[in-house]
Image (tube, rainbow, N blue to C red):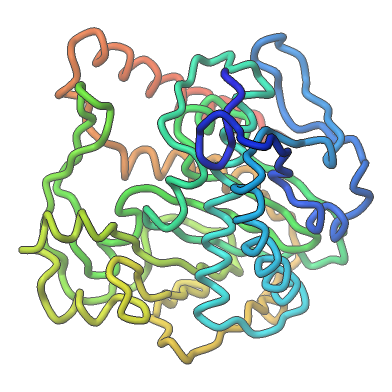
Length: 351
């Protein structure tokens, strides 16, 4: 891969280095210089070991500076969650922004680390993935005083090709982040696609849209999450997309849905142990699952890989508009992604 800025995708100006996992997070979870196993090098077929504080990638100085404010805010919010403090809807929106940044940054970063062994051709960078697609954070809680930082599901063929879902354990909190087109829109009663197509011409996705049901479902989607859990998230639609599908978005339900009246930025929803509800702009939520925790091993690695497969199966798009050669490649890599996760899950279930 060419050495491009991890934020904007251009040749870095006044070259800087970006810690995808920020220094404050490394210090919060142990020795920043500790060496950890972070996955598999697909080019050398050897295990990757790396010092967390040297996990840095190219960036423009101006881009790095721009995102430093997001890091400062995210630090305060993560500490609030670890200390069982209350979050308002602005806190949650910023936290979702930060997970957009980290998820996309890890995806780009792993292409560098693996020397792009799987032949991925990135069409977007961090700048293009902040507040552009539906997103959620699933939070589980270990019943212990664990201190540490663990990445889950980031060095699989699935994540290399389809960076929609990963897990991050911060001390005794487990965060599973997922984001893709219309991930939560349907069950929030919002417009959603009847079908999506990958375009052969520009490799973007085109959607045939349907109007929403204009009411909240009982759950954000049918998936057996590890309990206890809390999900925080929102639907996102770009203003241009709303304008081009105005027949579906021009109604009172959708109009009242946007946060702070900002077109395309959805209100925050919260689901705790199967109870889904909206949060009003002056609401606060405390992510405290301690009263519900039962003894037993939480297999968050299994949950993350299963959620990756679930998102792929339920929110994937059709390749029928691709040219024949591209269709064949699309089928093959789809099969590879799910098969790798299934085999890994079979091994994990035996442990």
